Length: 136
Image (cartoon, rainbow, N blue to C red; front, side, top):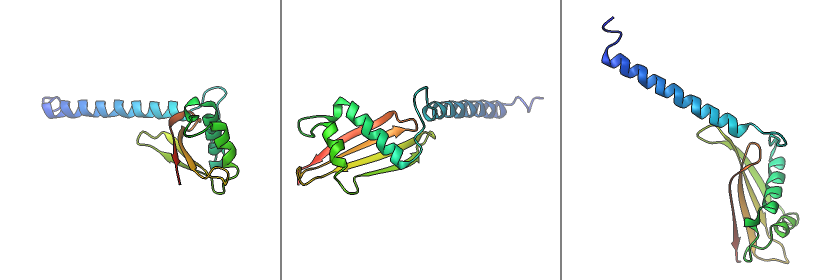
């Protein structure tokens, strides 16, 4: 009985308890981020992720600026640009599904190239969004 409650065994037991509780928190966080609420849908494909990102940036006032231009015009220019869009599905360290969507627009009427990177959760909510312009 004395060996069962030794200092080393108590320490190992507490360490295991801490490890299991941390794993539970990570699992709960991943479940919340990967599960959609009412009215949302799980992003199924690259094309779906691109369409969700386009809708998000049109609604977001941060994408429209004097230098970048308006977000609706940017989305319209994407239709005229060949190879404008790509999406990659990954999982981060806490098992949350992340869609990284890259949008690139360059037209003859507007020689500057404009790009946007949007990271979306599995349900299409923002994780990160940024825009840039390159003066050629």
